[in-house]
Each structure stands twice: as structure tokens, then as C-alpha cells.
Image 1 (cartoon, helix red, strand yellow):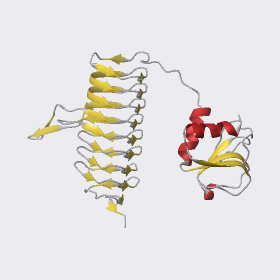
Image 2 (image 1 turned 90 degrees about the horizontal axis):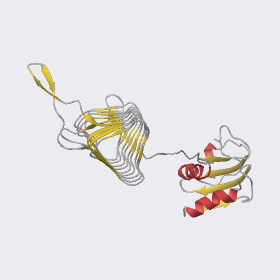
Image 3 (image 1 turned 135 degrees about the horizontal axis):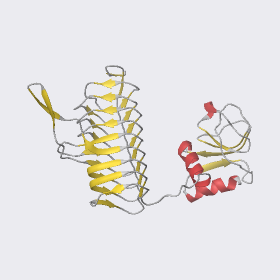
Image 4 (image 1 turned 60 degrees about the vertical axis):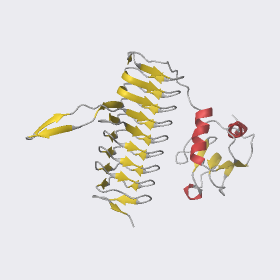
Length: 289
């Protein structure tokens, strides 16, 4: 494959770029910069990441001086690099509309081009919109709406009742949950993540939010748009997280308000409401000055 073919991918995607080098150069695959294979395409995030290796072709965010035969400079080099890998090198998986041994209830409705993995259980008042992909072993139950172009990875559980109870004389009685789960468009939900249905109103996940593996989202939680939850994050009941916030494997106490553009540092425990545009670190979490 020639470098020219990579440039054609950028042109089809109407991606602005600068090219330095030889379009006729042969490229035989891809590799990381750390374990670079001669003749391959690689990604160099920025100048300070370059280690002086002789490189045949790279995608980068800024022009780099050194023994690089061809380089393509783009605005978001990481996204562009992986888009190119998907376009030119990805092995296309054979997807069936509904995989083997999956059980689909009579009130479940799918949009166009929805793919369901094997051994899934989807039951209740469920709607899955266009081009959403659901992995193997996923459980979806109750009143659930999932938007367009979402990815639900294997063994995620969506719509089980949350951990809610009433207490009298020291005896706890679990309460029935009547709410559902509403998931927006372009949401990613990682493997083994659990999202509980609401008690009365719905638990909601906003458009574009990305949730890693092994996260817990309790009942009545409202997550805004483009929020990121890293693996192991625990969001307790009735928490409201504003748009563009980033939770790095943190714990958020129940019934808190987390403003927009908030970053919660790795392993932090948030015990109080957080205003917009701040970073919280530590146990208990405190505003980073």
C-alpha cells in the first residue's frame, strides 16, 4: 500500500492536513512508536514524544524534525490515526442481527442496523435506536431507551432495580423501582458496567458520554453530555453530573451536584457538591488550587 492511499482516506473524510514526504512510499502495516517496525505507519502525538527512530510514515499533530520519510500533520492526530487503521487495516467482523441464544421480549423494538450479540437477555419496554451494537451476554430489562450509534460491550447490565429500601424498626425492605433508563446517542458503555433503573424518574446518560468497564451507576443518576467515567468509577444514587466532566476511577457520594467541566482525580472520593470548572483530588475530595 502506498502513502497516497492514506492521504485519500483523509481527503474522503474532508480532513485538513499538511503532508511532507513521498506519496509513492510503500507502507506495509502499522506499529507503535515504542515498538516501531520499519516500513509501517505510526502515531507520534507531539514533538517531545519522538525518540529519534527512523520512521517511514507517521501521523502527528505538529511537524517533527528527524529521520521521518513521510509525515502527515493533522489537528487531532490520535483520532485520525485510529480512523485510518479502522479504514485500511481493521479485520471486518461478521455481524448477525441477533446472535445465538439471545432472548428478545415481545415489547422490544430495534431501529435500523442494530446488532445484538450472543447470549443476551433483552426484555421489557425496550427501544434500541439505529446502528447501535450490543455485545455478548448483555442484560437489558424494564423501561429502557438506547439512542443511535451506541456501543454496549459484553456483560453490561442495564435496567435492574437499584439498591433502594425503606427501613422500620431496623428492618430494611427493598422498594420496587418504577423508573427506567434513558441513554442518549453516541454513548459507549464498557464491559461489566451496571446502570440501575430509576425509582420513579429515569436514570439518564447524555449524548456522547463514554463509560469504561466495571463502572456502577446507581438509580436516579443524571449524567450530562460528553461525560467520561474511567474504570471502577462508582456513582451513587441521585447524583447529577454536568456536561464534559471527567471522573477518573472516583467515587461520588449520593445526592450530590457535580457541575460542568469538573475533573475528579484518580481514586478521589467526592463528599460535597462541586462547582463548575474545578478539579477535585484526594480522600475526602478537595478542590485543587
